Image (cartoon, rainbow over all chains, first blue to last red; front, side):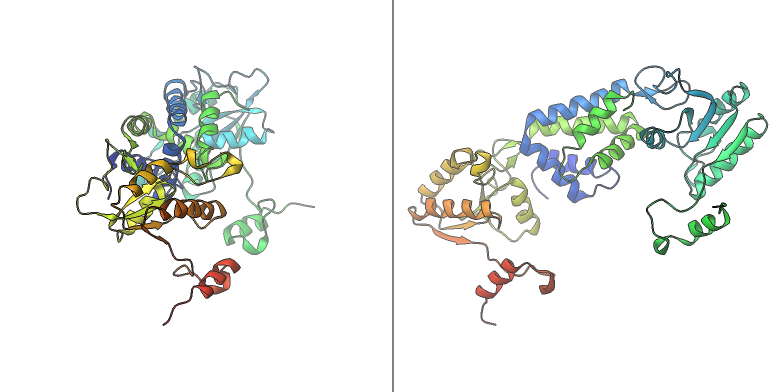
Length: 198
Length: 198
């Protein structure tokens, strides 16, 4: 379209981010070009640091700057309570909320046969090892409430059954602040069947 | 909050983009980290190219990869018709639409005394030189329809008055596809006072 291949290419690459279309990507690139080299330098530096410093925790597969992540390094966390999650971003949601005092295991995705993601593609064998160590008293399954997340939850539950750990799953029900009127049927069904004494 | 300063820093830097909050920035960074090094490499390469290759056109101050931009380089463009714009992104909007066959002059912003942007901070002296060359028959002012854009338009019009060029301004009125019901008063006023014979 125009004589700026570098701009076109940058827009194409920024459009790959989730939730960023060609229009937003263009706005981002023009913003960068308008505010000049200092901004581009800072962005380059930040991305190089991401590439060079951010690794995966040897124990739980969380993101880590170093060999072991800040959760696994924290002596105050309860090592008998283990929460299984799909992605580091799910772990961040828990850590932001701040009430969970156990440790984590990040699977690195969810079972999805259509995309050729089986148990071997996820961090299942290291989970099995942790379960067999006998240290885990309760395993909280916190995969997403989607079809693939549920399938993954079932697989993890089976894995844990032989270990003697108690296995729990996050509760389903009404999201706080939501309105019944706008809730989908299956959430409403889960909220009703999972009702508790008041 | 967590033990990932590089991630925090990258999120902070991505949050500076227009329309990108901390949440979207986080999603972008986790996306990058999930899809691994190849994506980060491509992003780094694209940003380095932006920094190293994209310059400003010596004639019209449009973005250019080289000394002169693709519009000024195009022999088929009408050099007697000059369109004055605030930013290269405004020029892109015209080029995308594709109907304008003249050339451009990018001011690099708008007059804004509160932000200390006066005529000296904009590409006004090069505009004056182009006007004095006698080549320009019509100057189309296409600054934004905002308070600062209007002030800039008035300044440019005064600059052009002594040159003998005809000076025009983009029309104000109803945006195509919009609905009267949702239009602001001043646009409606402009549409009414600027009405034309049917």
